[in-house]
Amino acid sequence: MASSSNTLSRPLAGSTDHGRARGTGRDRTTDAARSRFSLDGLGAVRIALWCAVAALILVPIIAIVVLAATGGGWTALGDPDVLGAAGNSLVSAAVSAVLAVVIGSALAVLLERTDLPGRRALRLLALSPMLMPPFVGAIAWLSLLGPSAAVNTFWTQRFGAPLWNLYGGDGVIFLLTLHSYPIAMMIVTAALRRIPADLEQAARISGSSAPRALWEVTTPLLRPAMLSSFTLIAVSNLADFGIPSIIGLPERYVTLSTLVYRYLQSGTVDDPLAVVSAIGFVLLVIALLGVVVDLLRTRTRVELDAQAGAPARLPLGRARVPVGALTAIAVLAVTVLPLITLAIQSLLPAPGVPLTLETVTLASFERALSASGTLTGIGNSLMLATLAAIICGVLGLGIGTFVTRTRARSNPALLGLSLLPQAIPGLVIAVAWLVIAPKIGLSNTPWLILCAYLTSFLALVVQSVHAPLSATPTTAEEAARISGATRLRALWDISCRMAVPAAISGAVLVGLTAVRELTLSVLLLSPGSQTLGVVIFNLQQAGAYNASSALSLIVALVGLAGLGLTARTPR
Image 1 (cartoon, rainbow, N blue to C red):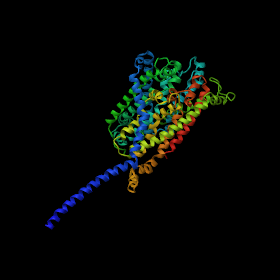
Image 2 (cartoon, rainbow, N blue to C red):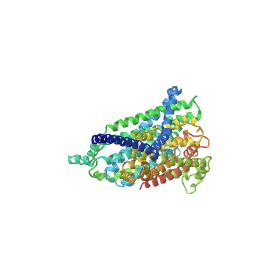
Image 3 (cartoon, rainbow, N blue to C red):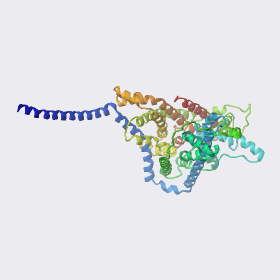
Image 4 (cartoon, helix red, strand yellow):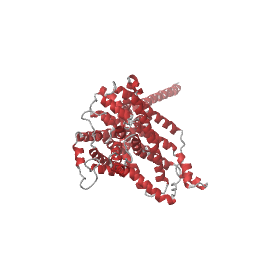
């Protein structure tokens, strides 16, 4: 009996201990999960990042949608002025995007797949218009092809009429094209480098000539990249303010951005905020439709295998030297020549004065730097650009690290929302913050411009951090975890430190972009909060062309030098 009772008692005791062990394991698992959340702080940091992104991006979008839906601005969309401005915006954005894609694709093919001489130098020069603010480029080209510029003055004396007056719709399209083709060139160049050289080589082996293989094999494979660049450029040009205001308004070529500026400044409509919210909502829908179409197209694309070898250069033969010379002349004409004429204009006392040793003066620089509001604008721009760079750098580092180094269902949404402002015109972002400003007490303060900068430029840092971290293995973090580090400590010590150089590069790019920005600043302008871009714009509008040229030259040279240093920092 005793033995039997002992035999029966053993399994009972074993089952009890097993149950206790299982219960203890569950408790340990729960306690570990709780301690992991509280000690590591990943959940708290993720919530903080979500709150920041929602406040900077989601709230402005919702605000403009709500005001557009509830306000009475829809009736004004049928006004002839609005319809005419909308037509001009669509035409200038679409035509400039098409021309930019054609020019950028042609340059990409010439520089990547042919034996054109001086390809490296030409590539750098061809990309330089992207480094100059559009409104500064407009002022530079006015010094070359303006009504009183040297070229038109000479042509008028010889033939009785100017060669080409840059003012008007054709000038707007021309300058939008020049400042957009580098984007298409970069996108198409990246696509060219992914196309296997084996395809062209197979066509050449089958008896096709090199130009025919390039046209019939490579060019069709570039269509997705060309469509993507068209969508991006068209959305960007749709709401550009600098070029249409400087080049279009003197000839009464009004676009939606310049019309919104007039509504906000002059009060020619009863409820300007409701009207511009309705216009901004329409632009938002157009931009998002373009992005959706591009995303749907990319889902059906065909991925090609990686290149087996370097592509064979298309020999230009006897045309090598003439094509190289024509390409060099064209690239120099659209990049270096405007800067030279801008410098000449800055050294002259007034427009139309011939350049001689007696007429060269630094008075334009003195007038520009001593003009009313210049020092205030420089100070505001430096302050806002520095704060935007620091805040975007910290937020972009956190978002980029979290979405690439942690596993969560919300990561794709967080990444997509942080990159969304790239597809939203700056006009829409400015109007959205105008709607929010009275409710959060930021009306008529420079901090409103800072908020708009953060919304617009956060994606620059997120992309800078996300790209390198996505291609970096996680072995170092796993080793840190094995050594006893918490998840947050491993992220901070390994991933964040690896991504800091990329975040610094992105932050510097944010600062350089913000210090010369115009669209957001001019629409959110308030007394005492003018920026450097607004100062240059006001000088141009006031007729101080030489002073605006001098200040524009300073901005262009500083921007080019700063971006050149930024390109070296990832190394």
